[in-house]
Amino acid sequence: MSLTVSDVEALFDLPFNDLIFRAQGVHRRHFDPNAVQLSTLLSIKTGGCPEDCGYCSQSVRVATGVDSQPLLPLDQVLAAARAAKARGATRFCMGAAWRGPKDKDLAQVAEMIRGVKALGLETCVTLGLLREGQAEQLACAGLDYYNHNLDTSRSHYHEVIHTHAYEDRLDTLGKVRGAGIKVCCGGIMGMGESRRDRAAFIAELTALDPPPESVPINLLVRIPGTPLADVPALEPIEFVRTIAVTRVALPTSVVRLSAGRTQMPDHLQALCFLAGANSIFYGDKLLTTPNPRADTDGALFDRLGLRAMAAEKRSSTPLES
Ligand code: SAM
Ligand code: DTB
Ligand code: SF4
Image 1 (tube, rainbow, N blue to C red):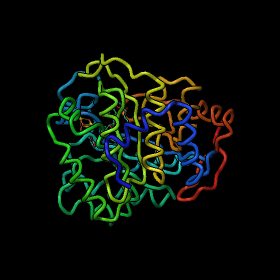
Image 2: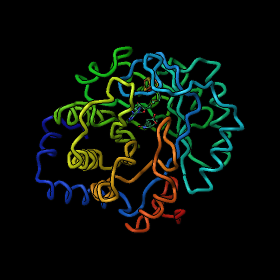
Image 3: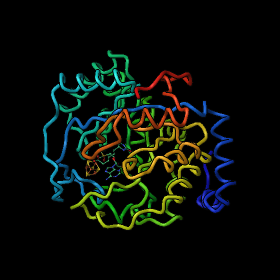
Image 4: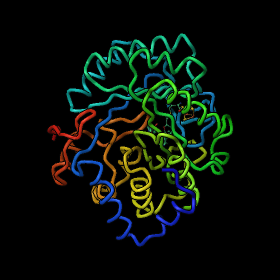
């Protein structure tokens, strides 16, 4: 159901205990409260991106020490996918530092999707803006999810990114949906936005019809050399509130506690799961920055009694610890 910015702001303004209680109630009506979906990320094409997203280490416009690499060969991608599956991941997400894919790139990515799917994993790619017909090619290869984030509110977007517009992102999301691919769409918190911006961003997600199946909420990883390297850190309770409000506003979406977990102590992550997060990136690397190790997450899951969510089901399997 589409919510107004004021509706979402009212959720943010609830007393913390009332907000968390409400989020847990919504979570339990739609999901197993102790099951967490596990996605592993791989950067299949790193660095050298022409876009100027202010948070990103991979833009050509910034010196972050990230080495540019061409598109990985298929065998390396499949080896990483096999390792992710062996650790217990159910989805494999492949990210490319492109404004958008060229048709010859897309043919190679289609082969990667086919190969990863044949291993019995769900597939997700994030390749930037899509042109007419490209989403259909990905659907033909059997792609399950396309990740394309709105990242922040419409008005804050111009403060962070100047080389493409919010409307361009919405246009690609429409193409993905039109091709019958599931949508993974979320954002980054802690980019100097206001609470109203966070509310407006969540309201935008509720206006997508149907809502995204997967909603990654990233805490900004402040990467030296990027324009946002020195932005003040988001207050942690406000981050937990953002997770809880997302859970209430998007009751049937899987909410991913995404980038930023290496900066979060265990008790903060526990609060995020209590607030309704039910997915993580799993494996020791995101795209260019570190993520908690699988054994560290295994130990945290044991302490919290959490289990891995099976693909497309709400049942569970043991997690490596
Ligand atoms: N180039 C494609 C695009 O922009 O859609 C795909 C890759 S891009 C790196 C995918 C997403 O990663 C971004 O939309 C952003 O939400 C997230 N991201 C990138 N850098 C980040 C950072 N430093 N902290 C948190 N999230 C980040
Ligand atoms: C998403 O929302 N977060 C992921 C994924 N989608 C592609 C990326 C996080 C990147 C964090 C910074 C880095 O490792 O470069
Ligand atoms: Fe390029 Fe994506 Fe990074 Fe923006 S977020 S600079 S489009 S890789």
